[in-house]
Image 1 (cartoon, rainbow, N blue to C red):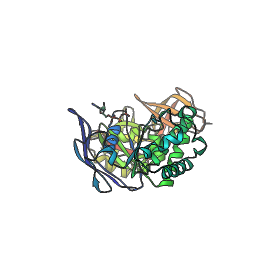
Image 2 (cartoon, rainbow, N blue to C red):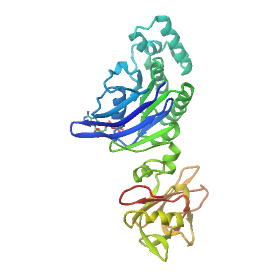
Image 3 (cartoon, rainbow, N blue to C red):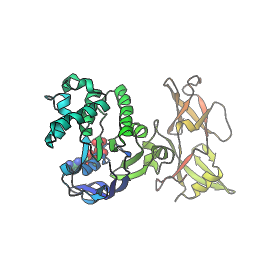
Length: 362
Ligand code: ATP
């Protein structure tokens, strides 16, 4: 297995810069998820490592060796695509062995490696079947197996679960995680699904507009998002964001909006003073807010827009001026649309963003 370094990587298609000065290191044996919305440059980045595209600038190193100009077949990297690309006229065993046959590996060795991969992925009973005789999840495992038999330095995966139904996706998520743990493989995994990234990855590389926005462990990305983009992309429901104006009176800092004013704690007040202008944005996760049904000191007035029960939790959609907040409450809480409410903030969990730079300041 291997470490992968991206050093000031740039990729342009004609005059369009799809990947902009991206640098990060994937440690040996780490599972890194590249996440971001459609068109942010994830697949381009993956294809640069695979050698399917040429870099416009920068370097990619695998185990310390620059691979920019190395032919894809010499890179010792295996890629698993979203459409599996299994050969329909070959059995599972033949599909698994194919990459080795192409490399003229001895028959006995192919047999051993295929059997080992099949055992690891629990598909031994499927070796004589054809792809059309397999479920989506089984096809997925064969595709993984085909990458596995090559024993590559790095696995690249491009949305490998996106064609599966919701239930199978959750199951395969756990299997992929286990696969990574068992093999200690270096994996770079592309997904637009932040939950998939949160649940599986050691680190997340969050991209937007070709720029790496944050590279960190999932819990850090969730709890300490670098900026407004990351805050709104990671977490479901998304973080509640409320534009406000910073006001200071007698040494106390307040965040104010139309019809409300929130006294900031000392820590948050000090942070708010660091914003470039008086325009700030409050950020709060649904689980960190309290919903009061009577006027409560320190809480801001709002109105329930709609109530969304999900079984385990109920999501109250609450209007504050022209913004809507989502607040989770226990399922037995009796609340109704149009009811006036007051939102209480836990200042230890409150985030503040500079509205001008969009960076997090608390
Ligand atoms: P998705 O999740 O939709 O697959 P992505 O994050 O993987 O998106 P990329 O496929 O890397 O995004 O594309 C990044 C940007 O580069 C997009 O704006 C896309 O339109 C553009 N792009 C991709 N391939 C080409 C190409 N061959 N020529 C010109 N522009 C391209």
